Length: 93
Image 1 (cartoon, rainbow, N blue to C red):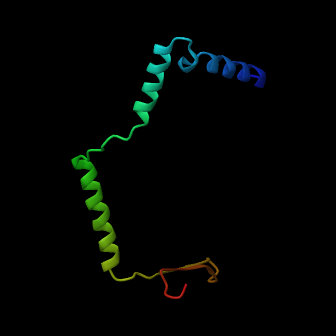
Image 2 (image 1 turned 60 degrees about the vertical axis):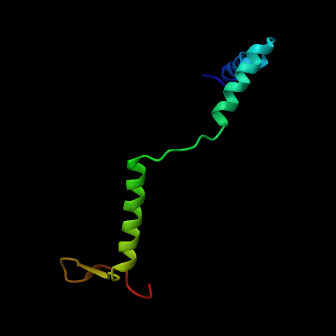
Image 3 (image 1 turned 120 degrees about the vertical axis):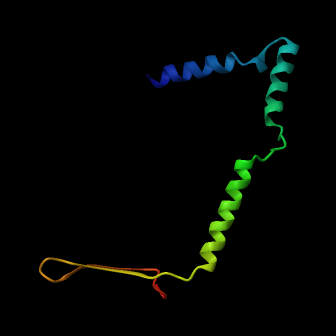
C-alpha cells in the first residue's frame, strides 16, 4: 500500500467518527461510551492475584535470607590452555 492510500483511509476514518455526527443524541452517546471506559473501576482481586503476590513475596524473602552463592567455571581447551574462566557472584566483582 502506498502512503497516499493510508492517508486517505485515515481521513475517511476520522470522518466516520460518531463524535462528528450532527445528531446531538448520537454525539452524547458516543462521548458517554468513551468516558465510561476511561473511568477507573474498583478492581476486585481474585484468589489467583493474591496467590501471585504471596509467591512473589516468598521468593523475595527466600533470596534475602539465603547465603550468597559463588560459582566458578573453568573450561580448558584440548591443548591444556584455559579457554574460559567465569566467576559468578564473586564478592568484589
